[in-house]
Length: 129
Image 1 (spheres, rainbow, N blue to C red):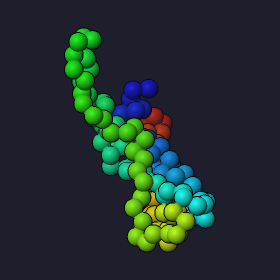
Image 2 (cartoon, one colour):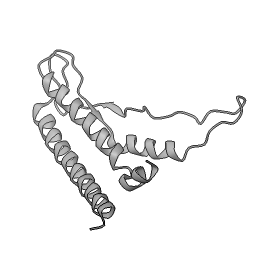
Image 3 (cartoon, one colour):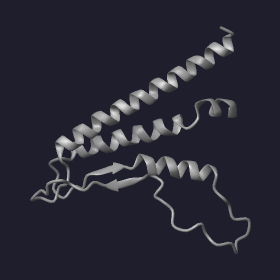
């Protein structure tokens, strides 16, 4: 199983984060008319750097050791700052959300295609093609 994880690399984690980001953007679009709803987004770079730091992180071997300091939220959720304010306190801007959703969907598809080609290469190697 470790061999398969090495072959896929960080792309498996990236696909999960991108999938979650699509869900968050869809929630923003669905709540465009909800008063006082605050638009959110996932900071992809922060989440992936946090995942890579966890792989290389130090661990305390004694209960008396100091902590590592302040850590980034594991989910990378951030509130979006609107370009134009709304009277009802809603920060969702449909044009921004739709553009972000389209870009996120394209990024998700690109990562999925990359993983598909990786798995196809592994299949060919196992079959001896």
